[in-house]
Image 1 (tube, helix red, strand yellow):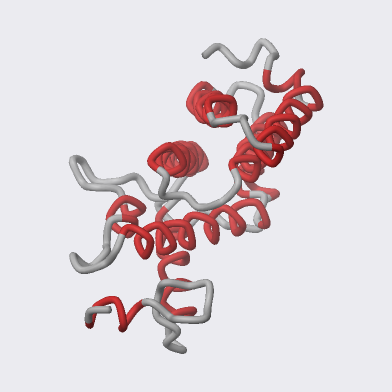
Image 2: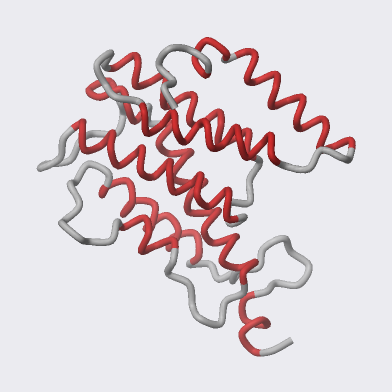
Length: 201
C-alpha cells in the first residue's frame, strides 16, 4: 500500500476516507455552503458551487474514495433539503437568503437533483436508486403544494432518468429481482404522479 492509500484507506472500517476528527465538520461546512448557495443566481459562465465541490478531489485519490466523498456530500444535502421542506416557499424551514428568490431556489434545487442523477449513472452515487426516486417524488409533491404554475419538466426528467436507470440494471440474481419488484411497486403506488399529465418527458 502506497503512502496516499495508507493515509486515506482505513483498514477494518467501511470508509476509504480519513477518520480525522475534523472530517465531520468539513462535510458539514460544505453542506452549509451548498444550501446557502441555492437561493443565489449563479454568475454568468461561473461553474456552479455543487460541481466545484464534487470534483474537488486530490489527484492521488482513488475512484472508491471519490465515490464515497461525492456520495456523502450529495446524500447529506438531500437529507437536509427534505427535512427543510425546501420547495414549500414561505412554509419551508429553509429561509430564502437576502438577494435570492423562490424561482432561483427551485432552479438550483432541480439542477442539484440533475447532478445527483448524473452521478448515479456515472456510478459515483453509492446509494440505492430508490432513495433518489423517493427524494424526487417528494420534491414534486412539495412543488405542487406550493405553486400550480411551476414548471416541473426538469425534475420530471430527473425522475424518468432514475427510473430508466433502475430498469436498465441486470436482473439475474434474486436480490436484483427483488430490487426490480420494489421499483415496480413504487411505480405503481405513485402512478398518478409518475404517469400523470404533468410528466411530459
